[in-house]
Image (cartoon, rainbow, N blue to C red; front, side):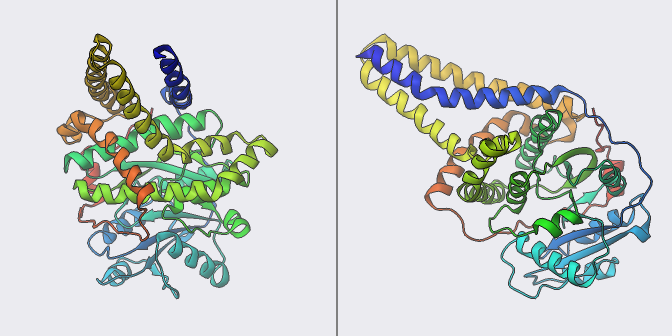
Length: 420
């Protein structure tokens, strides 16, 4: 009886083991170096697009950083899409020289705002070769647009730039979220790119060729338009190129409840995308031998795997406890669980330090508590995903952005990235 239960638990644990090994294998390619794109003369006319909701405190600094691009001004325009604003975002954007696109229909998400923009631009001012999308709280490295021009000239149609942080030292949660994105940059996007697969759009700091949007449209329904558009493009045979030389500095939440709310939206959107596109991804794998589609399917299933792994682990210990509560076996199992948990925390600290080293960061650049609390940040994804299955959020809840800092101040602080 006991051996049969152990065998059953082992068999049930195989899918989780395979899932972990899959991402471990991909992550190994994150230790490689990125090959930069060949320099090309300025050629493409590019529109920068920013959807903004009550971002008067920060949007001026973003537009200033865009006006400082080392790309011909006659080949670049900046558009702001104010939506659901109760402040003077529109006026601040105009004062800093941006063009304004006014939404004519209700906007419930960033994807809806972008969709209206592209409908407008192709009907009224179809002169652009490509579009770069940013969030209003961002600051943009001066080489971003010229780098994306190089990418376009190499033949790529969609590309994601490096999402860095402009406030990793504000709090332990902003530090943890900075480490989280640096980890994704290195062990997901760089690794996939080196394998010839698709990176994933990260919501900001990405580029799309006009031909792709004209042909495929930009119509998203989920709370994560970036993941959804990535999925749509992969199904249709495109891939997202990874361009770490194109750097965007993003403002991360400084309070845990803000991060919790933001990540609930991410998880809900990922679940929505799985429900909507999983069958199409499976068809692309079977019919087109599309490896990027398989990888995207593995990505979208992550909330399910996290919750199931948690349930499997808890149930395993309950079963073992019921069987061996009066024997040393349960005592040994409990000891192992404690040692495993402590080991996990230690590994998290070592892993965080490794990510900082690989990404050219220094401990003093982030909130020091983040180094020791990154494991807690990761663990908090489990209840977030559980809640998203029980009661998914239905509306986009904006995060207040208050970190008003110029790109020149960021550069002077020594927070620029060195690409390895």
